[in-house]
Image (cartoon, rainbow, N blue to C red; front, side, top):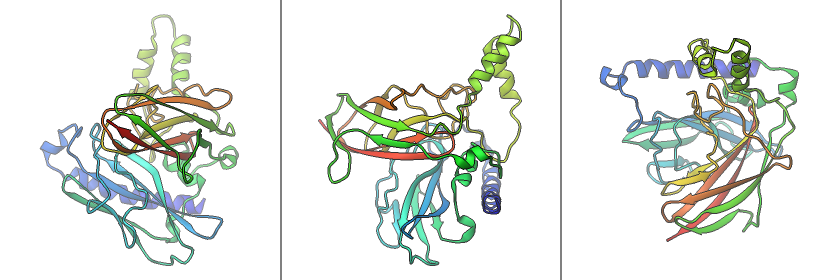
Length: 329
């Protein structure tokens, strides 16, 4: 609990300073909707130890745009230092806040060195500095709290017993990697098995809305209840996320657009009603088959080398899978 509290306090200070910086922007910028043309802030989320004695540094980002998804190739505008520039970071940046997006493994003798992720978007250079300082230590309760599944600094016997889901892409592998090929414009179908321990129990604001509307008389619609709830959302130090198991596939690296069927829940914090995001006001988790087998189809609009990222999320914890797709003309 001490670690969780200090971690959240440090994050609150950092983002309070960021908020002050944002408030100092010009009036013209403040009036913008920021759909396009804004920067991407990189974030060092913390570190966690592994059983083999090594450590994983955890990174995320805040894309200030609501619509633009910048593509920044590995190189002078997207690299790690010292050492290898490519540490498995994304080159496609989804909108808004994306936490705990990827991890970088470092050896047991890393010591007090820093690992720096540098990203330049629209001419704005940003850096995230990763270290093994004790107040950056992350555990499952930190992840659940910072992604909004728990209140700040809180936990329960159920949440402490939770185990992350397992996301398993079906099919053959090449050198341990899932590799596929398809022509541009033609659908590629694949299956992912998503299994979980059933913790936490599914919680949906959509169910609450329906219940309130049904008990309030025939003249009260679900939309009216939803509007009232939106006006009464209390201030809280962390985002609020609805507990529910889901799988989301997205482009992690690649030159063009990919269309997924069915449409995927967003893995980023879109709080708008109807946003198909676990952070959305009236989101309902999708129905997962009993065997956990989920079919997905993706179609690419242009040729190139793509990496797809699949995240299984139970509302508190997550597990990722990746697939490399060569798209030909």
